[in-house]
Length: 199
Image (tube, rainbow, N blue to C red; front, side, top):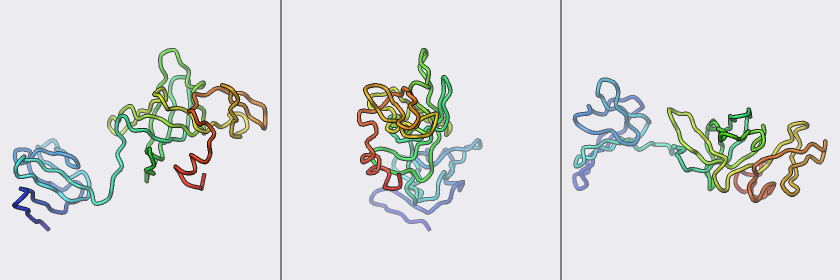
């Protein structure tokens, strides 16, 4: 169903993903739309296509809120794998307090002379910055100010590590490990406020 708003110069209609909105010569694609190889502008999401008759641009406003991750965003993520130079993490919350409906997987890459084993561990909950998103692949940064591990897991027995000075130690097995931690490391109240009581 299409409707016009002559005062604003906008025309709107409901569209589905992949639906042809126009050809490139008619309107330029903006948020929620894209151009295929044949020069046709198509909808990327289910939503309301908005044709701006003045600027000759078309965009699609999604019916459901889509939470995008962009460079500079901060997220809380669970570390899934750690190797010397690369780690894999799954973001589940966009700060300040927006839960992600689907976890977003991304990679953390070590600086030249660093080893990620000293910064992150498998199972850790960490604050990371989004460095970029390229073709759906997120890259995360642990080096930015305010980033680091909020809760570290012992690599030997799986217990939560306690922080004493700059060393993290396990009260169960006595294992000692290093991490890059945030200022309020181990504060479960902050974590519960952010992600809920199920923690």
